[in-house]
Image (cartoon, rainbow over all chains, first blue to last red; front, side, top):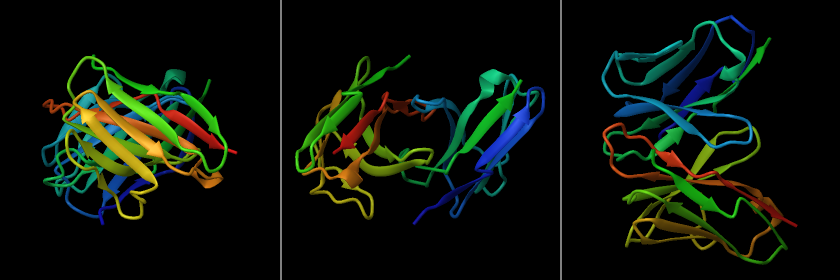
Length: 112
Length: 116
């Protein structure tokens, strides 16, 4: 079945450093979504990528979708303590009408 | 924005009892709801897809007789953990999809089940 792998599992950075998490699917995706989960909270939608090679930015966050629509990345520039949490990618297979398979998540710790 | 409410937030029960968790979309009609299970510091594991008025579609390895899902209306889906055992202790989260262009899922707050 469809698998979504995400690395790294953990990342500790100093405030102001950059951070990147990578996601790779075993199959071609129709779209990929990114979510953030704060400790004790529930996942919150960040963005959806649909097109091959798509790049989207949200302030300090840059999201990319690979040309083959099988991999994606989230890059945070100049991290802040408010960026702390676990970032999940979630892929939807073609025809899966938004049935998402989540990656393992990357837990980000930011030290002031 | 859209809000999904999940109840109860916490539940502790004795082994062998059944527990029902409710997932409600408060300000939109959800064509599809999903149920996930999350172990501490782990990812969300999709358990089943719930469509209003039809039987839920379970993922491989998820016991449908153990985890009963009912989607009686466009705003309510329920998950019943039957004859719960300690290994069923987990964080259960529902999400709702209303068919928007962004494909966004709206998540409930989650329900933490502890089976003694």
